[in-house]
Image (cartoon, rainbow, N blue to C red; front, side, top):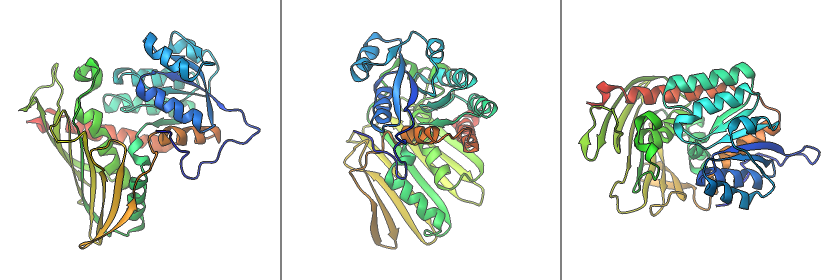
Length: 347
């Protein structure tokens, strides 16, 4: 995909130099976000870092003028405007804090931390140095979810009392660290469920979570202890202030007959809305509004949404924005995940 500039984001003024960005972690997603940012015209890849020679070679084919560096410390010495982090999850919090304390804005892959305390520490660091912090919660930037959120906020669905969200991936992670809870923070619930929890809370303007429960499975058996093992199937419930309920389900390696099953259903007293992936695609979505037995389209492909979160962050950084208190919502998402991982909720 060639990501689009987000709606409403203008190209940088001709008189302003592109942002000098460092890219830490150059696997597929790191390179994809780099391409999106370069295509936006907002930024240049000034410095790149990855421990894998193969990933560095792939990146240098895309950005031959970028300066390779051996470490984050060397990257930060280059005088950057921002750092894009796409490394393993266990490294995110410490690397983000290091960059922020160096006075550099941060765009990080999810999860920002393995637990809420790690996320809170990163947000506190961003607040202390007054630097822009964002996380790649990319599904917020699909046109379908943008339209659904607009309907909810306008009251067009009435009082929303329930939401159901699913993300089943027919494949599993290809890196061993994903299956080590000390390194990943969790299994499919951390990897995929973070998007679902975030979408639900974000769409509903972050009501307080009053209750949480989850059932986690590994290899088809209930997962009662997390020592050395992560879940590959999870079902969960979040109770929200005001009485609404959110139900979540996610998995790795589910035999669903297609590559992925991804969906959002929102139920309100005056109507509903859905977003569904098309034919098992990870990228193509159709969204609809429902009233009784009638439906009307809200969004359909093509929709190049994959890099929009990164480009939106860069546009704000180029406009001179600094710390945004909305980053504190990241802690609320992490706290909800922590509650779902409590031992009592896994029984």
